[in-house]
Length: 91
Image (cartoon, rainbow, N blue to C red; front, side, top):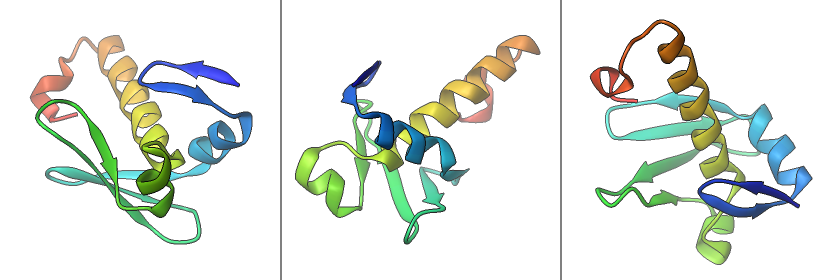
């Protein structure tokens, strides 16, 4: 198991799957594709993630949410290199 901030414990398989998924940001959600079918990940005003997949319904965690977190972390790091505050881009 791998410890990931925001996701308690993640198996190596879930981490690998999340890293392969494609994440696209829309106005208030993310479209995560690359698996069997695309899924929508949203975040509440309290910063709680929610996915429309059955895995999230059952476990309150899934590879789609992890993919969004990994994607957001990557974007945030890239923006810091350019000294851009991610809040201005809605990331």
